[in-house]
Amino acid sequence: MAGPAALLKSLEHQAGALHTLRAVWGGREGAAAPHPPHSPLQPSQAQTGSAGRPGPAQHSPGGEMEVARLGQVWELEEERKAQGKSREEEEESGDLTPLGPGEPRPQRLSQPRLVRPETLQQMALRSKLSRVVDATSRLVEVEQILLLPLIQQHPFPLHPKDSIEFRNICSHMALQREGQQFEKDLHDAQQCLKTIIEKLICSLAVFPSESYIPVRSALRQILQNLLAM
Image (cartoon, rainbow, N blue to C red):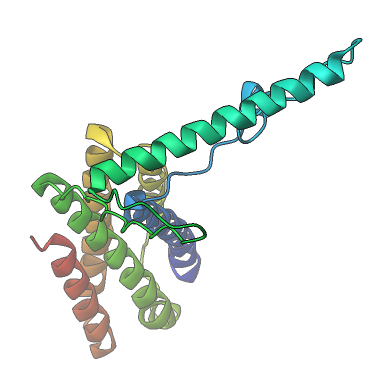
């Protein structure tokens, strides 16, 4: 393929890969959030209610009285547990001062949440992923703004198969998230993106026109940032 049609096809797949990469980046950055994801209620939980209170029983003679009695027992048991827990917290904190009638109980200061530091390997992966996302974004921008108008005037051979492969690698990487396969996919994505940029630079090198100089310079800068350690 040659000309704008080939470039537009490549841009389509690169934009799809960029969307996937941003989702992967956002997912990894949000993985350290303190709140766990909400999980749907299991059938057993749905039957017992959100607070563990027994659900509605089958109607039988005397069943309503039995349910009411069980409810009262459950409430008394919960109140006893709450009082015992509050007493234990006071003992742990060293605050055993009795409170007067109607005196509000002081709030305990929440302990800071410990955050596990990143390992060197995790930092390296995050840095590489960031560079791949940034390089893909800048490549799409350069192709849209600088290269597309020029290729309409001077078409040259361009094959979108590398961009298709790049998108497929990113889609596969999004399913991994962690582990050796994720690292391999990230490495393959970086190398595939490197190949795309290098082929564009080589294709533009045969044109003596000065109009291609800004495009080549921009592509070289993207490649340099992508491979930076």
